Length: 248
Image 1: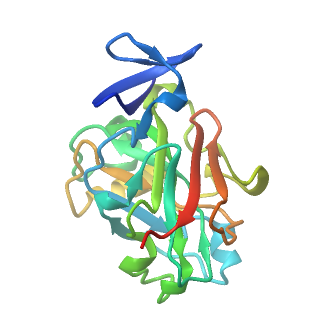
Image 2: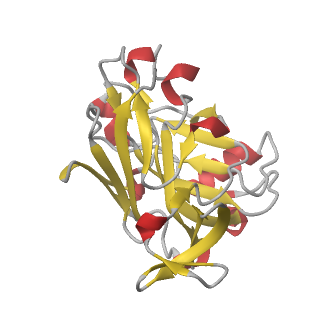
């Protein structure tokens, strides 16, 4: 099942797909353009992976990390489907990152790899923009690179884990203004989903609603104000976002 969170006429609703658009959990059917799309979950602790694809590490002239390169993201960073992401006026390189996002469904501590999937409730799409101008180095990504307001569109749907047959074999694509600019597969991750759940839960307790952004493949290029960026994962949907100028 695919579910979304939307705002409509002053209320917040859970929504599902419908032939005429979407259906709210009060039974009302509306068009996609009539609602404000929210992140499909309200993220709790959010983890993001750096350099978790071999081709992306090579693209940036880095060796593959020997253990997961993880940093945290604040709740201010997330924005929903069809939302806007501000490009700071003083930067020269801000790129998209199409990522599979993993949602934890129950408390997890000291989980073994072979049991990891039983702790996952679902999956969604994330576009984790990076402002490369602010980067100190890829082994120490600082706050300004990945924690700006609305820098991480997410959604549109939360897809139940049971409906994703093989999360480690999903095609990822990014389009900028209709042009295909990034393509890869989750099978090329350095640390796969079970390894990440085992690693994180080995030193901290994971809770329902925690989010793991699993990294991006190669093909990241600069985006400009006015660009429409679509990140797509086969079976999960298409996440639309627009780059806009930073408000004064």
